Length: 144
Length: 172
Image (cartoon, rainbow over all chains, first blue to last red; front, side):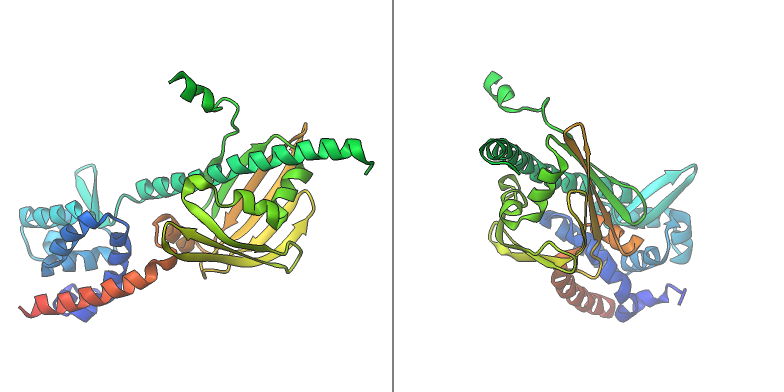
């Protein structure tokens, strides 16, 4: 199913809605209103549906939705503000994709996870120190 | 200010590194100032594990901690986090080589990783390397996108809501 006509039928874009929501939930509540406002427009939902299948340039999207470049830029801007879409300009082409810039998102997650382990290991340092002391004492008290 | 600086032994502290080493693998390293047998002991005795697995600074509290560290043995850790409902992490040890290597599964999710921890002693210090091997690129991508665990219920609800919203908007 490669047409974008699915935007007229709410059930047709259900799978990508799931994906979009997965992305959405991680943003703060404040961003929620912006997201729902962004999603209240059928064209913008169609754009998300389209980006759920593949990244696309603004020109591609404008053509697919039979819209002017300026009109499409506006829609993409709303989606970008809501954190649902990110865009990146390579040469003269601005490519749109779902979600945050993936690398930023991943780097932030890895740093958070690293901090968890770092905190654990700091505590583990204390346990190791204590066991070392105990071993020294025990070693003096008894053999083996 | 001086007091604060003194209370932070940052120069003494060993660094924890974490990197995504491949599409499916996350690697954590840390050196400990002690022999491998001691570090290993702290990973394999529940009463010791308990003392460091849920550091206070993270807001986590360990509600229960069971670990039968032997091949085929199971473990189960339950955490509380500031009033939200407890989370359970569980799985099985599939490799236990004293003082050098531990491998366990993470069975709380279908996308759970296989965790391998190695302990390498050098000059009285131990280099610890922990590898988390995820079942697929998608599983690790999903984790790093923050999509794991108890959020699914929320997604379901939002999904329903959005379909309803979509239906009413396209009819108008």
